[in-house]
Image (cartoon, rainbow, N blue to C red; front, side):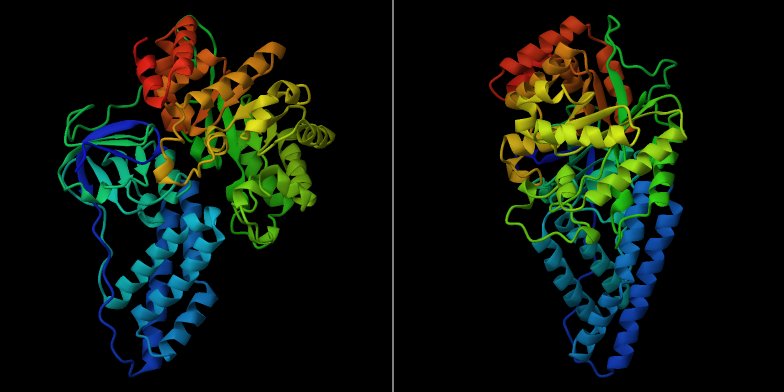
Length: 542
């Protein structure tokens, strides 16, 4: 097999160690005639109930709120009445319990794939649910994570939520999957734990157990059969002690704020950050039949604000829509969801949801000492930015910004900064729209590489616009977690970098090792490069 495999970088960082594959789940046996339908239905129900209890126990046992929420949702799926009714009907149509479960979940899976977006990414949740219920029906255990006796790189088709939620960075050095996407649960939970991860990696399943691999979760590369980082099996270095001064600085003292990307207050436990650069509010809204009540929203926001007394917290309003479906939005079918009603555009149909959220954020902010700011996703025009700013100011929120995720907004950054207080660049979506490349496609990973000089040019345009009027411009895409890329961003004039909390120490160290002039020189070399590989190489020479 080739020495170098490529996929999508889903969680930044690099690690080297022996690779071991997650075993396949039990297979369905050959079908047999059903002689006692009632007993077969009971068999299926008992397996479903057992899986539901097991997943609920895992949810209760984890301190990670993101992982717990993912598992709770999967438990709800397992207990869904529609699933049970469908299984009973399939049994009475002549299918044994495990085959009935597989058939019904296959129908549900097809519906998710047809819906696209985040729902399509959750098809893996149903695959795991199927495998667990089938295993219970057959009286067989589900495969556990490998136990090679040393830290290892985990190879899998994809990780089920129940497995990803239990990733232990002291055992699992990195994760490589042949399926998955940047928004899969594997990616979300790996980022929360600081485990380097590459998803949608073709050829991953051909790696033999024990083969030494190096995983670059930033660039989306897996080097097979030779060591290019730490010796095989060596545990990752101990994280540096939390500095007395949390501020990011270059070697000559230029400040670049280091902030956290989070989905809830639990992710801030032990985080050595200056504040929150991206508080994703989607977890609060997901899996609600109706929008969450104002009181529920206020409580969730207040918990995050309380964890950051006196520090900055930037709250992104609901980033949902056709590509991130929510039941209460009742979106109409769209031919191209990524270009449809999403982000701030949802307010065109449901302005009440945005107004309620802004009011809840403002109420929680008044009860806190945190320096709360709010920003809107998927802003495209100056008028959209102005309308959002007016809405927030009317609610009593003094600091308002927007995300730059659309090239049209990037090229009009100077004009947008006339009506907002700051910009935050979302590199993931900006790459997707700038290069017309679906961010979930492993085949287009080269186009989605954040080191693409064209993407750097768009970021530079935003940073220059901010510098001209003295207003901050941050980057909150996970590309900011790459220490070398962080140096380039600082050199472009970006004023803050927001990332998963575990990535902050390495970025802080990288900035401290370079003067601002060195960062600027690195940025100019990257901008002048012909392609991402050349940009990386040019920066490593500073």
